[in-house]
Length: 578
Image (tube, rainbow, N blue to C red; front, side):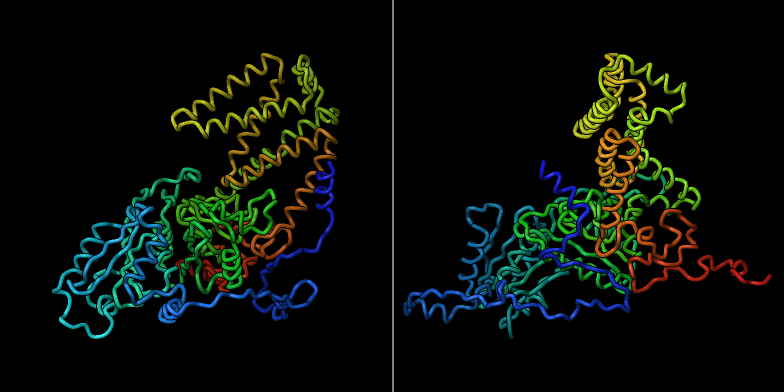
């Protein structure tokens, strides 16, 4: 009980952040007061005294060990001796225990010893056989005497591969082999060649399953990182579209693509994204959902602070506004930052519809989410504490239907809410053919049986049905899930203190939500705090009126349209005299 009291107390008290480095998105002409301050020496302890390390005595080396250490390259650097490299590679990949690691030894032009290493199933064997081994083993591709390094000659004259890279570190070679490349090691050379041979199986591009639209593109992301990046580049054909790669996850080393447009995005956002990604210290990162939890500002907040989407067209439009997209290899979603609450209520279909239709749909979605969150709590408050606000005829009907129900209203609501959640979860986990039928039949039978058994009143069935429809109107799944949790909070507060309890719940949730930031951007901007807003926040204005990018992102290029986007209607410009 004390833990719950302390948690509630912490909502209303301020504490200085401990061991955390905050991020603030500043205007271009602002300079952070903290920038340039000297940081304490990391080698000093909490008392300001330098730490002292004890040095243990090492036993003296033997002559043979000293000679071997003297002649060997630094640790982690490739050796010019092929056998040493082969032994090291086998040790790194646990060969022969690891049976899907293929090491093929051969002679280049029947003269020079060499070997290649790759992962079976992650490479295109036709490329390895026809464009790597065959080219290297054919003596006609080599002169009698190779001038200079064999590696340089092979890269320039032999291998007909579009992507080649020369590396000198074991760690880099091992990492790229695990990503599907083939590494070529040559005797007498202290560097290897990384050859682009990726060719593993992948799922084809399909229609979106969560963000379906009637008008608009019908393509969704896949689990392949390169395919997802290509889908975005097909939409944004701009030379300033930048794609950077980083590894996340200490053990699985998942590739993560960072996409943004140089010259539009605020550089501070890109730096902060990289800083957070580099600061991730966890073994496994399987996708964007895990990545979002690791980089968001307030991990215990109810609202999602990273926008997750499966649509390339929506990702491209958000990048064009000055945001950063994160795509993890193996995940069919893109994570976009920074984001706001209102951005989660937008859909990509609005861009293909006229402005008044898009605005109408936004209001419908907002109303549906509001009803989903607050309707059960309002009903509990009305029937428990504020019966005088209900019309007499309706109050008599409610009292008549609840005459034989043995439970209070709160218990009725919780019974049906939990039952509805069970049906929804079962429908998702069941096979695709059975799931929808199970949801419909289960809801009908369960609702009718509950009313017949006098466990709940018929009006509760109507309330829960409207609530469920409202939750389905939300276009963003993480936000819809947050609303489902908030619904229970409003129900409990409404049962405790009626409308006063609901008001307190709104105050607490709203206050906490207004304090959330997504990469330096307030969550409810431009409403709280009030900033300059464009015609595409709550009301979707006409496309030709959306002339500026969101001000709260502080983009380098604020203009995204000319003074007259409909340039062919010169006579219709403001101020023109006819």
